[in-house]
Length: 157
Image (tube, one colour):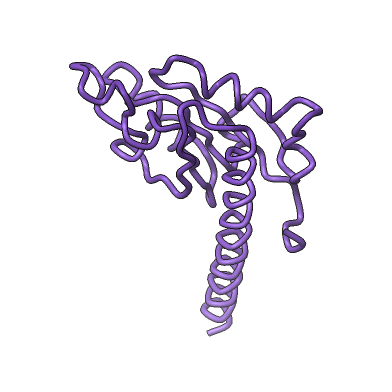
């Protein structure tokens, strides 16, 4: 995590769930677990978020919202599915309105299983997400640098 020049911001979205995982995500933000010590900041604005934490399954009513939140996030971005509902649809997967886990709508990078997911597991998922974000951020910076070099070279010719 030493290469990150700023703290990645975390956005939490609750899909269709029983709210058990949401309570555990909130527990991660309290002083007992203190997710911010991992270098992440909690936000409510997708345009400032780098990591999207999704809890609960995806249904027909929230599918467009999840897509919109994901699309509004700047690149690079990482998605963490927290809880078995966000991973697979969970106990609700056979319900008429559940489409499945978050990966039925957006690409998921980290899966945190559990019903409800334990704070320790969520913290581990956040650590993995920060690592993925760091890697993608470095790759993105390299791509931007190459584009600038190519543009500069093109302008000189």
